[in-house]
Image (cartoon, rainbow, N blue to C red; front, side, top):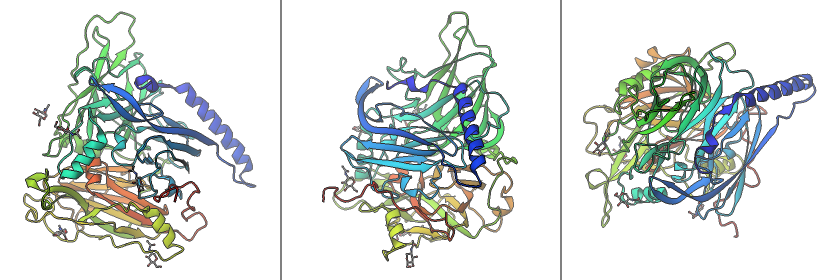
Length: 593
Ligand SMILES: *[C@@H]1O[C@H](CO)[C@@H](O)[C@H](O)[C@H]1NC(C)=O
Ligand SMILES: *[C@@H]1O[C@H](CO)[C@@H](O)[C@H](O)[C@H]1NC(C)=O
Ligand SMILES: *[C@@H]1O[C@H](CO)[C@@H](O)[C@H](O)[C@H]1NC(C)=O
Ligand SMILES: *[C@@H]1O[C@H](CO)[C@@H](O)[C@H](O)[C@H]1NC(C)=O
Ligand SMILES: *[C@@H]1O[C@H](CO)[C@@H](O)[C@H](O)[C@H]1NC(C)=O
């Protein structure tokens, strides 16, 4: 069952059932609210990390999967549920799972990034991720957060709302659509090779829609995603970008998409001929089947990369189909053309799309953007080049090695413990964390100019942490650079949603740009594409105690060190402290020692 069988549209009847159940529980809990806190239901899942022989593009290889499925199983829970996912690692390599975008309030131990909030789950061992899903609703994803396992270890994480959807149309069915990348070779070897020689990674051999490359790739016509629909209905597409290294455009021929939610936060609905979606982002859109198909009955849909880098990337296109369920037999072959798909370099489209995305900001779902800030941190995001060590071959630009950094700090994971454990122990013992992440770029220069400090693109290596008190209203300005090239970086923050209050091209000016901020209905997200050669200003309330990874969701850049960690101290209140670590938390040491 490796192919599309797990992706058929979920009939909305199931959700009506969820609403009823949740409403019933709400009534019960309201009755109880004075005397006791009612216990939310617990949803339990079991993930087995295992190899599975999978064939795409006529290449059969062992693919790392959860429960033998590719893409992996869907987690569907309801707002307010407790969730327990027992992950058994049945391979020789380490593994972890990250519940991308789940707030993990006080449960940072269950967040998943290796060496940040936990040591990896070793081969033959299990770890149960326990957390509660509260105050968020919609589509997210889960994925491995160890090496490049995310390439195939990923799936949908759906949170059904407690209240009915605030949507402009009645939904006939929900269709999860997961984008990914396929390598004919071993993905871990691609990362190892890249780190060994300091060059760019091999590009993927195909993009996939729900694990299927589609007819534009060799040997793949039979591996094409086809979604059957009825004419005259509205469908909710839950779109997830689980690709490793590529931002994507997506469009369906002849059909507009109405965006209603991003990263599990409702948006003001808007119509668009296509979407831009960065790795780690999710987008819910409504699609109405109001077109008249030709005699094939099919409309193609496609993904293609949004490319801003001058370095080689997978520049191919994956096609799937919307198949209208016609009474007549199809009598022609379907077209593969999606004219409304943007060109790969269409930055104006990406910019307009970002500008159109706004929080719903309704009475029921107010926009909780901090109107003021306690601390502003300006973080320069850049690629770097280090000299080739003697007697080594380096395959990066100019015979050097690629790295990447935030404020000239290339992040190094500790490997013998997790940052969270160090942080937690500091509260009781005196183990020191280096809390001195620079809050400004170490040098001021024309960050996005034609010729920035090109004579020295070196970086520093370390694990400096940005530490803030509980409740800090934080403004983080991400400043792109033109080191090597200007590139759009999708920056993901764990444990918090943030509001994108401003963005622009060129250098951020703290005296001018704040005047243009949107503090009314800025989009609420967990991953922001920082404009190529520009900046993005974020606001968040640091109200989740623990340690949270902040990194570029292009996996190659994280491997090169484009990452940092945010530590939020415990607050004074009773429910404002990090919970103690669970008993089964994996250790980095030898389990038999
Ligand atoms: C990367 O691509 C090159 C050229 O196609 C190939 O020789 C090499 O084996 C690939 N490396 C991996 C790890 O797949
Ligand atoms: C993709 O990149 C290759 C190599 O850089 C180039 O030859 C080819 O024309 C590109 N294809 C498209 C569709 O841009
Ligand atoms: C750890 O404790 C020391 C001593 O109390 C303090 O100076 C330091 O800021 C603490 N670090 C963190 C990350 O809490
Ligand atoms: C980054 O750090 C390296 C190593 O200390 C230094 O040579 C370089 O000038 C720094 N670059 C910037 C932009 O601060
Ligand atoms: C798994 O992680 C542990 C802890 O960092 C490390 O000691 C071990 O070498 C890793 N195992 C493999 C197979 O990479």
